[in-house]
Image (tube, rainbow, N blue to C red; front, top):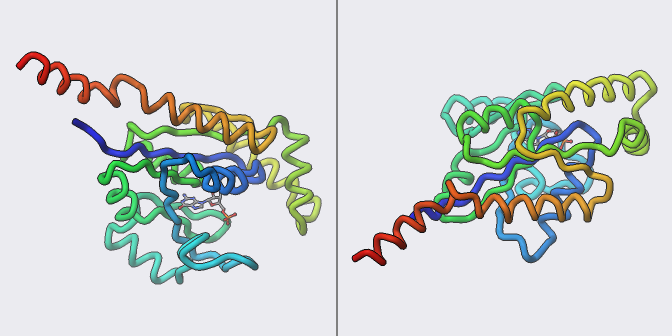
Length: 206
Ligand code: 5GP
């Protein structure tokens, strides 16, 4: 019987609210997955804690992890490395628990190649006006930077075709609810449960 956990990958364009959705999902006591804490070389933001929000590492440390085969995936995003430590993901999946990754699109595509049976979810904005509002509200960007971010968001949205599900983030609670329903349904897909039933039939036939 296969009782390996399921890998759930969430991506989406900059400013769509992935972090907020992820945090809301982690707060849900009914959830059964573990969040994989990423490693990054970017600086800690106020309030962030090493080992909770990220493993904050130097460029040298990160590159030596890559060399040692310690990363499931990694990408450079706005001049910094971000990556998923392999060991935690493997051990958690092996123990039968689902693992949730919140990563950008290039990393997600590496995961897709290595773990084709993962569930790939793309979080989308309701529309570009809303996305622009969110980026503007976030703070310090000047007009040119905001345009650059929106342009990047447009090209990121094109990557949606490589995902299994598109979830609109109109309201955080609704987006979380949609993702939870996807996870529930994915667990019932025949390829994921067939071994259990094969075993059941074998037992019944004996
Ligand atoms: P931030 O600096 O705002 O925390 O994250 C920037 C981007 O990096 C976000 O799109 C986030 O999803 C992505 N990211 C966070 N962790 C990882 C990771 O482990 N791998 C990859 N490829 N992207 C990540």
